[in-house]
Image (cartoon, rainbow, N blue to C red; front, side, top):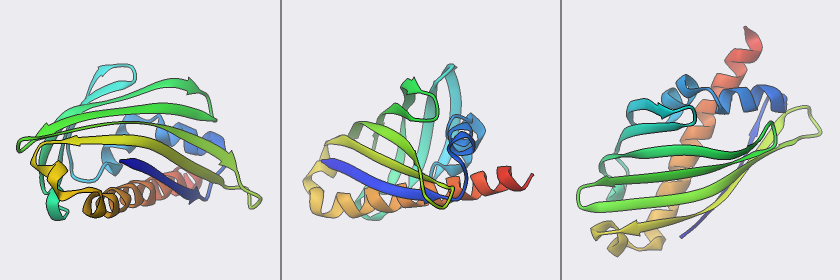
Length: 150
């Protein structure tokens, strides 16, 4: 399943990058995050409780950031399991300046779902993934704004 999206954030790239690299900001913004413990400088063990349609459940896994090009892009890898399902995904997050002085965050990637959840099909999973991404970037925008104000 392809995953793509964009989120305009009201701050310069340096501030957005700083927020996206801050483990505490990530923990606060991951929807349903119950655990976010470092296992390396850019890798975390996670537990998320998700309550969206067929994706409902608790998933444990790992999040990793790699191939960082400061203030420009990074690769995000996610693995998780829960309730007989496995989810794997990998994508690239890019940051670009907007004419208004903010930052446009774009993401593109591929997600693979195995187990009973896969039977739900892309038709139902795609909107759920989009909603979770929108929640994450809405929260990230709030974190960026809080950093700008302080």
